Image 1 (cartoon, rainbow, N blue to C red):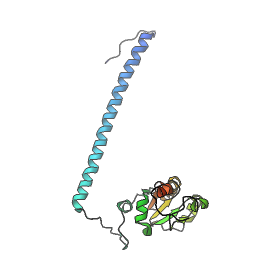
Image 2: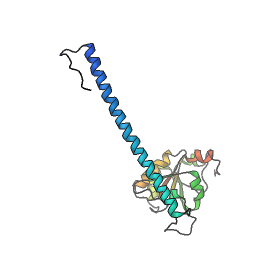
Image 3: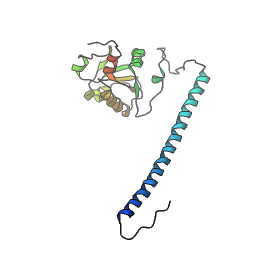
Image 4: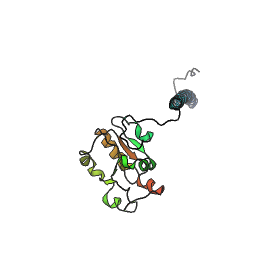
Length: 189
């Protein structure tokens, strides 16, 4: 629709016409963008479903073998995939329980929190957030490390810092000790 010709001096009618034309053009642009986003989302979902079906068919329900197996129990797919340089994974308390002996648990809370109301995971090493960088200098950069805090925020920052420092298998336990306790898992004080 071509906008009508306006008089040289603006009046209320001309302003209303211009506003309406702009509104129509804007709504067409928004509709076009929504349409493109819907198509992209559909294609992404289709790709994921296709790859999942292909993997299930190829493996016929068998577990994926870990070529770097050390004889420890097979790890879940959460731990099997490397997050890539400068990135870390989020894991659940169930993942941590299932692989407690195969991962290094680091609690980044303060001492009073570690022994306080929420307690801590048995076997976790206390390394307050402010000291993580210094302590990490002595850690193996290829070891499986899971960071824990009260709710997942501080451990997420610590995981990000370690990943940026070159650690390749860093994970953050989402929900922290709050979620651990909500799931009624055992704690030490």
